[in-house]
Amino acid sequence: MIFSSFIIITFIKYKQCRKQPGDIILGISVADFILSSHWFITALFSNHGRFGPHTDEDSLFCHINAVFSVIGGVFTFLYNVSFCLYVILVIRNALKKSTIWRKRFHVVVFTFTFIILLYCIWNKTLGQTKYGTCSMKSSSKKAYFSFVPLILFIIFAWVTLVYIRMRLPNAKKILKAKNELITFYSIYILIISVFYLMIAIMFMYNSTKDEVVSFNHKMINTAGNIAKIANSVILGFIRV
View (cartoon, rainbow, N blue to C red):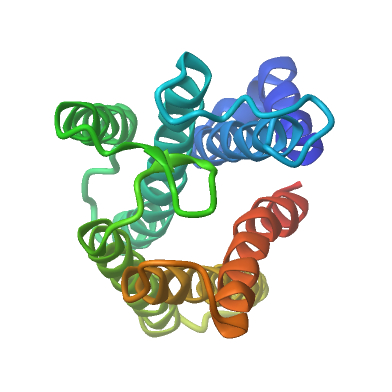
């Protein structure tokens, strides 16, 4: 939340930060802030917290918290996809005049997020997971719904890195900038790929179990939740 807040404040205060890809970075930061707030509130008002059990599935609190969970998760995913796509479009535009999306990124992200949220509400999939957190209810359908996009994004992110290496020329004037871009992007997608893979494995593993009974199950879920939180913290530090 701290790093995300810093980026948001910087975006508002300094006009030069509002240029692309600053707006996309802002989108990712807002998404991370929403997710971090969701996890903070979840921990604060969990059945094991000092404030007592406030996470009944049918409660208004749980439904609102679940909505923030879905919005934050979808926002984070779509804005990370937008960032990769933006890098590709910028390189294409540098080599050959082409269109770089500006407002379209945000329109697409908000539209898809709204559609997914409506789908969850309409199909009554918002509620408690098997661990008692308020988000999308645990099910095999939800697992595949979450697993496939995450794996596809990991593939797309690494394809983007290959595209950068292949398409940017090795001219002396831009060689330093090229190497810096590749280094930054490589670290960024390596970290996000590891975390997304951990989260994807957690989703798939949860879909095969009806109850939380085994030690391995608890460990995989714990690792997945740590990945969700660490993803926001570490990547937020890198963006700063």
